[in-house]
Amino acid sequence: MKIIEEESWQSTSLPPTRQLPGFQEVLDRTHFHWDLKSARDDQYIAEVRRRAVNDYMLTHIVADPVTGFRSMDDVKKSNDAYFCLLFFTQGECLLEQGANETVVSNGKIAIWDSTRPAKFQNTSRLTQYSILIPRDNAKIMIPGIEDMCGLSVDGNKGLGSILHSHLVQIHQAIELVEPEDRPAVLRATVELVAAAFKPESTNRSSTVFRQAVLNRVQEYIIANLGEPDLSPATVAAAFKFSPRYLHRLFEESDESAGSWIRKRRLHAAKADLADPAKNRLSVTQIAMRRGFADASHFSHAFKKEFGQSPRQFKQSCKSIDPHD
Image (cartoon, rainbow, N blue to C red):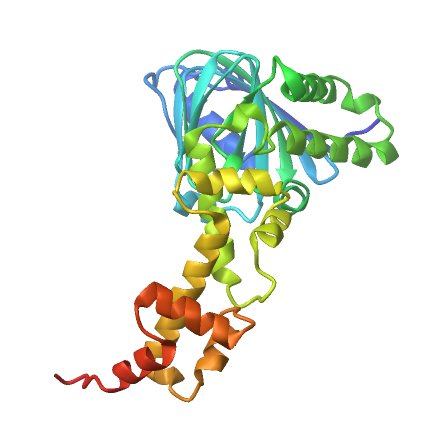
């Protein structure tokens, strides 16, 4: 059964001094552009195999120690957008992306995002297997996947062990699957990733991960302050969280999700009241713009938060001479 596209390469096909540059060129072509640095420039042993299966890529790399940097300029050189799922059968690698970092070793499974800067460093010879998942597909099926990049799960226990076994089988036997059945196999892969990396699983309890998720939740809230239905329940539903998990996210900020939403609405409304460009808007209109369904409730909450009513605050802003 035919794979859509396959490419294999070995550095031993080149003179020793051309082996690392050759590896760089092959990665550019089969994966993405990385700025590679090695302690040796006289010889570099590496192998690369890439197979294209529908819109997904299966890759296998054997490589000597190397450090790779992927800057935003490097990201801009490629139009391809993938989330890259990887595991090792030999060696280990430090993977960094954003505020997250993890050491990937035999039995660990990690994710990184091709559309953001990243860094990796392996200090010993490694054997790596990857599946490149189209970014748009992954974002639909794996809520919050951006926050998982640079993190890993244990492939030796729980859902991680099932995912690890599945990934090994795909690399070993994808050619044996009928072409019309391959999309189902690949969808199952993404579903297993979503289950194994879900934020509520115990292996996703790191402080760094929770803070990254909380940041994205807060960004979502700020972007949707004008929605009257915005609430902890709707936010949790948008991220496919349980309300209990959302509550735990906000616990470390010493403020409930509901209180955080209310304060952001009040501060946004206060900024609107002080904005000369919005002078023609009434207090009620500003309250509605910021998601308050009841003007009297807004006035009461505003006075409790800032010590004066919205009308008093708006009037005080008008009386200030900007040239004083």
